[in-house]
Length: 278
Image 1: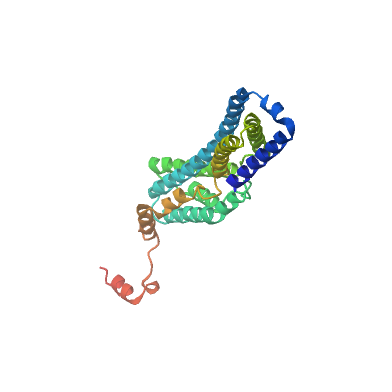
Image 2: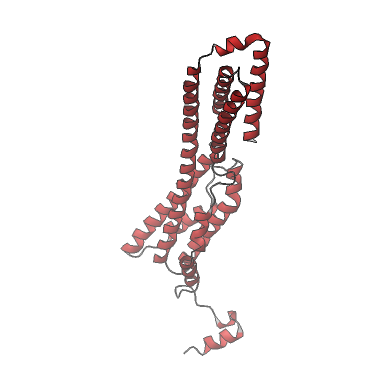
């Protein structure tokens, strides 16, 4: 679509200038100095560079926010082992729920720019409350408690950053300025080559191709959570699919610190084995 619109624009300019040249204005068009072409091209290149710098900066910020969020949650999961048993399992469940909601609910909302900042995700809120309610009986647990709380707060801050970046985009003024500069350059090319339609068509086609490629590159990276090359929640999903993390969560559910199940609550073969465990 970008290439088609730009080529149609270049063709319309070429046809319009050619028609005016045939009506007796060729001499006036030829008076346009070819020395105007380099400055116009340089200005267009600067517009592209400034616009691309914003787009790639937004993309880098979004990618960094997702990576920091995943890293912080991973830290919380690792340090949860300091509180074995039910607290560790509960913390794993809450973080897993948060990651699932982020990937299935927040990511589509960020793509539509409807994600909200004024609400704290319930799983992370409950995880923070759980961490602060844990009894830290030794210096190691006290240090781990502070680090887990800090990691969860870092994850919340990274979430806010990715939602803010999801709302960034190249505004209409920048797109209009970019295409206006391209039109000026195409007009100058058509004026300079008005006496040779083939050379004019070739030169304008080459410049239109460069304009289309630049616009397509910027548009593809604009709004980093939209499109074929959008940033995916894979870093977050990987921390809950990590075999070591899953194994620790399963071990925590059967930790001796949890209440011992009664034989009546077990299946018959397991109950029999439990009764004769001594």
